[in-house]
Picture: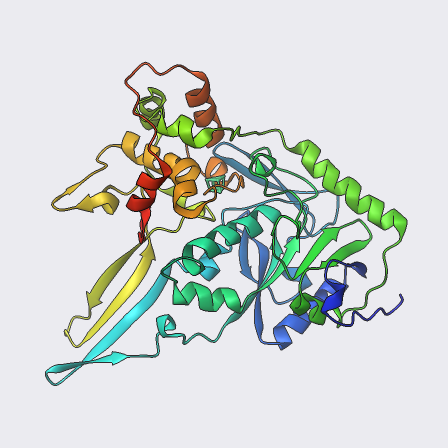
Length: 408
Ligand code: SF4
Ligand code: SF4
């Protein structure tokens, strides 16, 4: 194999070829540079994201079948490392951890002494390298960047973890039946033109990987790998695999005028129908890579000498999520499902100038009763409402409601 050195950031956008085993060196280089490498791993018959120490940890030769409420992992006749699509985990759990200590204090005489070494104050040693970030997941990270890092209020925990992260994307060469990234303009291949920011992006061929440089940081790491220029056959093979993934995507979400259609149908009968199936289990919000709602609890120890304030993921499907001034404002599943869907696909645009959905399909697969948001939207769009519909809320009005909210 020819040793090809990538020299500097001017190689951004360039593509090289590496052998499959070179991935072992990539993992080792990142680990020795102080990164905790996180990637796909099989646990309990599901592909999750967990710490990766070497190539053997990756789910080689696996593929999965997904549909509403169904996920089945099986062995593939191929020995590829990334033939599957998405499991229930997302990178959100590393950038916006499910539980985080915001503050802690100890009693000292008649005073409280606060511990300033919390992550909220920038105390965090880990740097994560995410291996296997799909195009829709890059888009989801972009959505959470907008929520946590680019508004009036920034989240120090998220910003700290995010700025230290290294993203190795993987282009999808197959698609699950639940994917609809093409409708949302987020995939299935990673594109620097689409602001899918990555440091390196891999396309897995039978013989090796095409590796695209996405940043100067990525170029510096790629420089350490044994690589060479890809030949025409390899480049064409990569293109055909990306085209295959596009051709396998059958699910669609028509986003034309969707914000106004949803706001105009807040009393549509479909909300009652879906409420009769929804269990309010919160699965859809927990697996969603863009959902960001949280709650804060203060807990003292039994002696009353120590107190800790922690932040936990919350969900708009929880009854007490919308509790205020002595009561909850969304006391039925209809209003809670409607809140989730309308926020994702309509008011998110007013709040953040983008959609809250990237088309990953996780909420469809992991809904225990198989509720599919694309079917719900289709029904609302194509069935005349039988009840009173409310007028469209103007963008300006909803922006006033949205400013500064942690909750959706
Ligand atoms: S709403 Fe569903 S399909 Fe859209 S990003 Fe969230 S989990 Fe994925
Ligand atoms: S839509 Fe499905 S996953 Fe979401 S809360 Fe309802 S039952 Fe649970």
